[in-house]
Length: 151
Image (cartoon, rainbow, N blue to C red; front, side, top):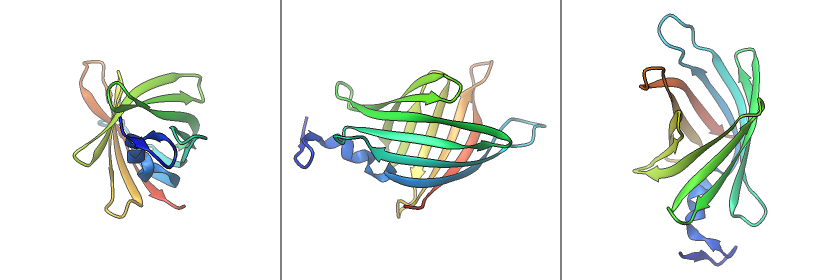
């Protein structure tokens, strides 16, 4: 595995650099036919943890009138070359997903949720379409958010 000489770390980690920064997140839920979407307003921060081997991603916001938040840790799985994520939410739930970049799209894949994210050409906007498995085990939209880099 190639090593980034600046930090003595795997060079694959540089693929996460576009996420680094402070973001304002806006969007809405997709609750299905006959249900009004709920607005989403949040703040996301992506930063390298000490040593530059993990990204720490705290997120805080509101889904309508509901306060939400949590922290995600992203790291490289050297055996697969993919990234793994661990998300700890404010309700005490922990979820894990794989994260990979394919054809310009970042894909988070979990057991019951997945997300497809695409950066704008200038790297200052990330549009993320989230989906979840329904009771018939079909993937359906759950929310779409747009993150805008402010720093």
